[in-house]
Image (cartoon, rainbow, N blue to C red; front, side):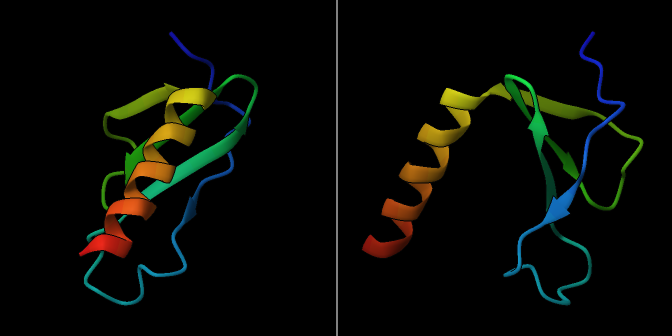
Length: 67
């Protein structure tokens, strides 16, 4: 199990006040990026390698520009 004791969680600046339908990301951990539902901070979460998260963010930004 991954130790998330030092995780610093943040929401996107674009999340706004949309009723809480957001994810939070902790990218300050060595070697991983953790993602969780902001409405359920004690619930399940996903972890990614830094490389996998970087690829995801680049692809999401590229997709966002094309739509």
